[in-house]
Length: 517
Image 1 (spheres, rainbow, N blue to C red):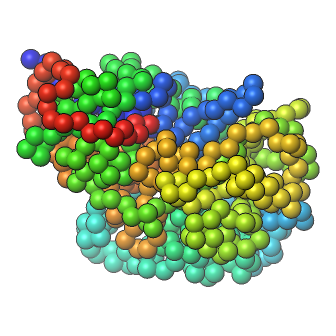
Image 2: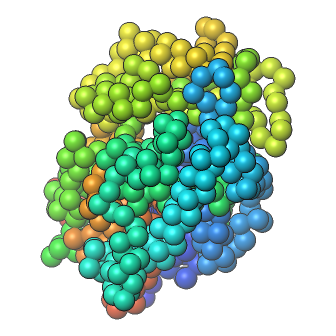
């Protein structure tokens, strides 16, 4: 008899990685996606005559993605054209100049020294060494391993390596530890910003997260065709291995019997039977009951106060002048503590830090005419309780432009753009309030509180940026690997057979819809 397929809800990076890896091992896979293309948070939106990336723009941890392609029977370089960036990012605080961090470490040391002096250069060396040390301690035991708790992590690192456990500095804030390396507040701000990669504030995250800076220092790559090309490549590998994709298929219900998954229900009323489901939606949708009450206990809910950051995201095709844009650019707030205090109070910052991705720049390219831009400002994850009306949207646009102008960057006015707010993200990803990274990484225990690949419901697994090991495209891909490994382990010990899909007939279907991207 034929096995029932593993059903993956959502064609985000975590779901795509799971599909590619499971299908390579001969497991029948069906991916259900409510949208009409793969990617999840990776997507493009039209602005005028241009398609502009509206999701993640930074590609790091190339070896982790290469390994997933290899284990799925493919080679990354056969599917994607990648160019390594010489400049990781360009940073500015005002019109007096900017600081570039480079792919070459010694070039970065020299740049920091020219920008802030010899003492700052020495601080950058010590910071980089500590960030690498923390990364190397946690890479295999935690980042690439299944979810664990402190005793399990201690065991994986090695009980004899008590010094290594202390070296990851989980009980000290990153902001405090940055002060040990940098006297210049601008450099504390620069390296504190890496915590926003997981939607968190540097004042409340453990110093452990300085490892993010080391990850980026190992290389940033530009993908020809943008991040959407990565999603398409993973989909192509999964299809070649036999995985099936159903787009426009909104999964709204995960029925159970005896504490075990027995199927997936769609908005259309169809029910597909299965014994294993990988949920690539935000786990908050499970906890909220949006996939049915029977699976609401699968993961712990995230209280609104514990949510990660959301964002205001401007997508534009416009002429620029003044500041010499690189591909990745950061224009810092003049008052970082105030910026995050205002977010904690539920407000978009009055003088925000703005990230600008100049999508058409790279390898020295300078567009002759309007160029595609994605501009991001951190915002509170209150999209389910606060409506961002026209007046507030206009005010936020003005404050963003003022910050860019203060650093010497002029954008065409009026700015032709589309604006995505926390309300829009909340609608697209229900139960999150627009939080883009799951639970904020505030406090020493936060990393252990993220859902892992296994849940409290047998046969139900999680993958995606809001699950272990954390946010970001590479981490989401690693979560997909972990979910696939859990499914393979459990399928090896269970006999499952294919049963004909039916419409209804298992239990009452939830009336609520949930995200599948």
